[in-house]
Each structure stands twice: as C-alpha cells, then as structure tokens.
Length: 192
Image (cartoon, rainbow, N blue to C red):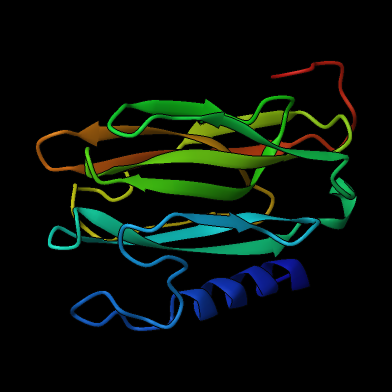
C-alpha cells in the first residue's frame, strides 16, 4: 500500500472512530442546531469525508462534520478559489463547481420558516486540469432522517459537486455527491 493510500485510510479511521451518543453529541460536530456555518479546508486540501446527524426535535436540522485531505503532489497548488452557486432553502439543488473546480469547503445557513438550510460550495481550480470518470454516489443518507456518511472511496477521486432533494413532508435532505478523477495534464475545456 502506498503512503498516500495509508494516510487516507488513517484519516478516515480517525474521522469516524468517535462514537455518536444517543442525542447526536460528539466532539467533532462543526455546527450547533439551527446555526449557520462556514467550513473551508486548509490551502491545498480538498473535502474527502462528510458526516451528518438528524434531529426532528431540534428543528429538523442536522449536525455536520467534514474532513479534508492534501491533494496528490501531481495536482499542484490551487490556482484560484471562489464561492460558487447558492441554493435556496426548501428547494432541490444540483451544483457542480464551475471552471473545473473541486469542492474545498461548504457554507450553510438555517431557515426556521422552512426547517431547512441553504448551501454553497467553496471551489478551487488546479491549473487547467479537467475532470473525468465522474459518477454520483447513492443517496446519503440512504433514507431521510438517518445519520449520513460519505467518504471518498478511493484516493485520487474528488468531490465536484452534489445533487440534493428535499422532502417537504419529512423536512430533510438526501444528497448524491458527484465524484471525479482529474487529468494529469492541462486540457482545453473551460468547464467540463
């Protein structure tokens, strides 16, 4: 096993080794109930793991935690980063980072009136690299109101975006994350 693969396995093991108490409390949740948050990976790192815990009694909201990982050496440093499109609470949303960007952060704001959040991705572009071998994960969580967990399945894949549906009856979201590999060379396409 290469050191990069070993590092990823270690990061994921540490990230998800904390047990979740009955009320969803742990040591690593980024937000508190019904509060907004802004999470950005350190420079040169990208999002590799996402976890959430649902509570109906806390405003049909979720606690969130995220994990980042340094990009492979061959990808280089990000050439630019930006906040991409925003969704509106209570609406379905599909977003892929523009300009061949990869997800390096997330921000969210809770709206009491609809018991939902709005979302926005922080995207970073790496030179003129292009995505390929893209696919969507299955629903995270598998069923509404369950704990959700998504970890990049293989080193060298990156989150490009997501598609999310909102249930107005259950007041919860399911996510399908869009995962891609990136070329080892610069390419001509502005947004692929």
